[in-house]
Length: 321
Image (cartoon, rainbow, N blue to C red; front, side, top):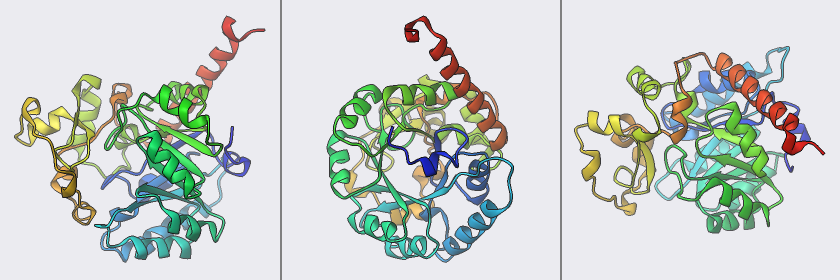
């Protein structure tokens, strides 16, 4: 595997808590990192933009506090899109604070790679296709986040099995797999396929630290994969959303028109658009969510599931020589 040893030694299990619009905040990121997984948040969640500097100071100070267990590094998500007028400002702050990992989305991030590499940071870029993965790799990113079918939010249509296999054939950097990664068993499965890390978002919305409407959290507990639908209406790009939230907003899930890709505007998203405040994203792995719990307890539970799965596989007759 290609995960830097310096990074894995800081982690209690191979998992990244995905950045979630509106939901991810310093409290969630700090709890994830101090539990031993990489926590992350979208820079656009810090509003107004001056608040980002305060958030970075808060997170760094909290993670520097003494701990008897591994404390993982944190990551900041940057949206590389013309409508994100904050991008230059936010990247400059990431460089100032030497953010360990920057997660980039949409356009291949050549300038950001150069800026983050200047202080020894890592850049992971999320993609929904092999074509997009190759473009990002050409820009020198350190890792690729493969957003496969079943992931929450702007997920791609490709099977995680096919996506990991094809990308691993030519990419020797870090591969992170997203797509219904909601349990320790799923993280173990991602590694068995050839990924280095799992990428879990939906599962962490149902935590006490997450900045999500309590109704949203309970809806995740009460729902299953059959309650997820794939639509482009809300942002112009296809994504997975909770049907009950669509109904709650007064819309008919069976009669949704297609969205217009040109309508995507991250300046609006940073202010909290209807697409993220009222229509709630979720991945197909939400069937693993049984209750709302503290992040530390959730990570411990997932770590136990992961270790059990790895041990069971190693003891299986199929793995014995």
